[in-house]
Amino acid sequence: MTTPLLPRQRQKLIAEIQQLSDNPIFVIIYDTQSVNDIVNILTGVTVDSEAKKEGVAHFRLSNYLPKGEKLVDILKEVIPTHYWIFLHTGCSICPEIVLEFFQYLHGQRFSKPRIVIVGEQTDVRYGDEKMKKFFELGRLVNLVSE
Image 1 (cartoon, rainbow, N blue to C red):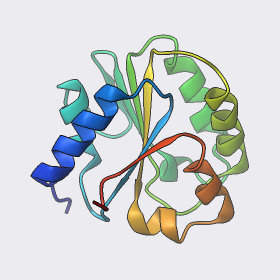
Image 2: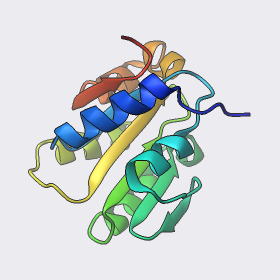
Image 3: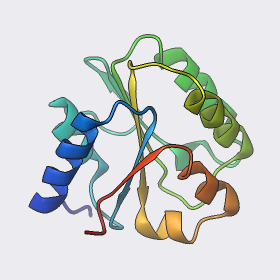
Image 4: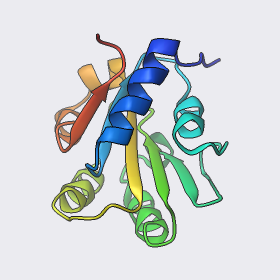
């Protein structure tokens, strides 16, 4: 069962994402909070994990373990055609190919699509070294701290 974002988290998310032109943007939420909430708040579209709708795509990294190659292939496919891409880590492991792909993306300049990576607090804090490096690649919006 997932829980919705708190009102203060919603306000912070909207304020920080709208002010930032960074790509990708990393967001940390409490464990069990709804990534679908984040997708809907930022886009106005409801898109479940592993779905694409109205220019919004939503994926879960843990569904592509252990290697992550298929996820990278899918992301390469949707980046040119979508306005928003959300990636929920859903785990504490980041495959090398995913880290390398996002290191490459971080070095590029682009404003569309907006790419948002969402990690749960425990997964990011106690994740493997690649997960920790992953969340250091771009601007961080930490919704669990004031």
